[in-house]
Image (tube, rainbow, N blue to C red; front, side, top):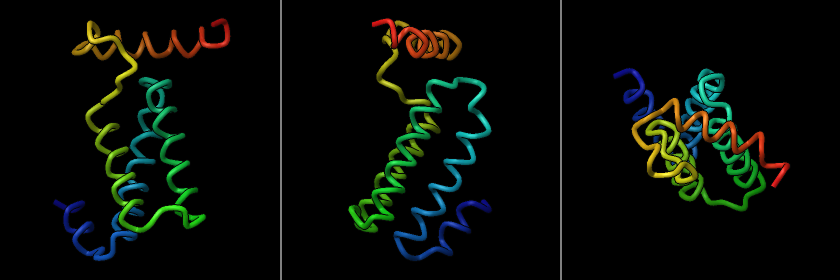
Length: 107
């Protein structure tokens, strides 16, 4: 497990958080075309957490927890915005999120 080894090499919480943020950002960028609304949401969240940390509004431990939570949500495609009837159907969820994003200005 190359990622696990890299993670273990980074002993400080900030270094671990930076690695997680970098990997999560890469995943988001690679998969953006599959479900733009979903990945855009988490991209924005990740940017905000990084910005808060750079402004020293988050401790190293808080930064690590925040980026870990975002990584897990991206990895597991956790999104409470989609109706429970759509769970298990990735295409329907992506369509729902994209439709909601497009219609947002109307409502």
